[in-house]
Image (tube, rainbow, N blue to C red; front, top):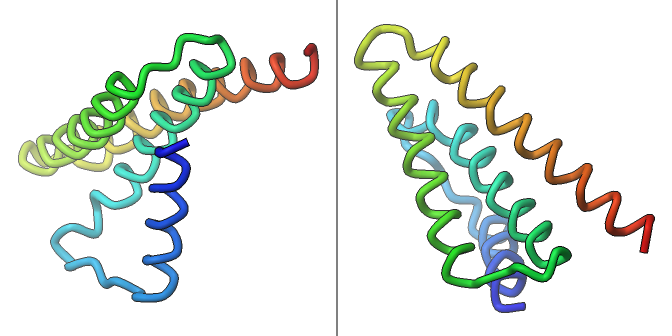
Amino acid sequence: MLALLGLAVGVLAGVFFEPTVPSSLQPYLPIAVIAALDALFGGLRARLDGLFNERVFVVSFVFNVLVAAFIVWLGDQLGVGTQLSTAVVVVLGIRIFSNVAAIRRHVFNA
């Protein structure tokens, strides 16, 4: 419940304060959002499976974002940023759709 409250506060703060992202960080924002969505849907799936742990969720959320941003940064340093960004999006996208499918099964087969 605390995670949902934090998410709501963060969304409202973003709407009201309209933060700007420095241009040097803009390539990393979409990847960070996708990584955060992966952790969010994974946490929801864990909740429905009865396996949710707040510590695991927070660590997963932070490390998903950091690792995804690091991979994109590494790709930029190697000159293959677009390819590694695409790889990160594909992998996290597959995980998101897998979690959403499991959530759908929980909701409609209950």
